[in-house]
Image (cartoon, rainbow, N blue to C red):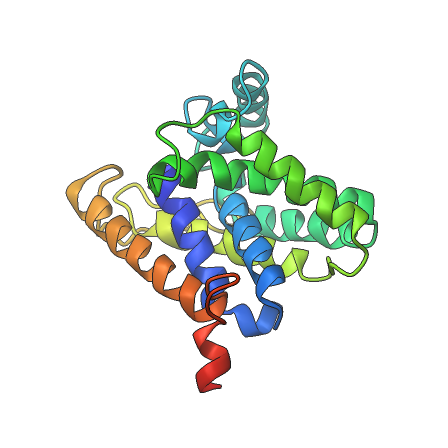
Length: 229
């Protein structure tokens, strides 16, 4: 599945389970962004993946190293164990505000780079994602009233969403590292094909609906969930 669709599904999944993450709209918004970012992390094992090219020059080099350590694309990074390790890292980061704000900034940067052009917020990925990520990371670091205990939940949701959506493809995944012969492949769509693009468009619609439902329009309308309980 393409990176932009992974990011969209990650945000949708986080918003769908928002009550399990936080009751504060601003926190939910940040968590959804982090989940979108976490939903593309497994593809850091592919030098040509969108997420691997967010950071110029260094990104592809890091991706080549990850690919070497992971044994190639859709190998070790596309497993439940990798998801558990990433979630554990988020849990450890959440115990230190500096570490948490850094991780949040990185994930928001990934999300903004992929979702910005996809949602037509910007024409192409640019320096905008770094400014957005920096602003959010700085706010989390300096404003003590912004909680960070939700971070491992958002990361887990995003990572798991990636595994589930890749399992829909023809290639599928090997979800359990210690059972290498186990294959999870539903074969319902081809990466970048018509079916994926159609599902991706529907996911964008779902994202917009959930944004209004869970977060509302700042300064204009409260979340619909507040009105209807």
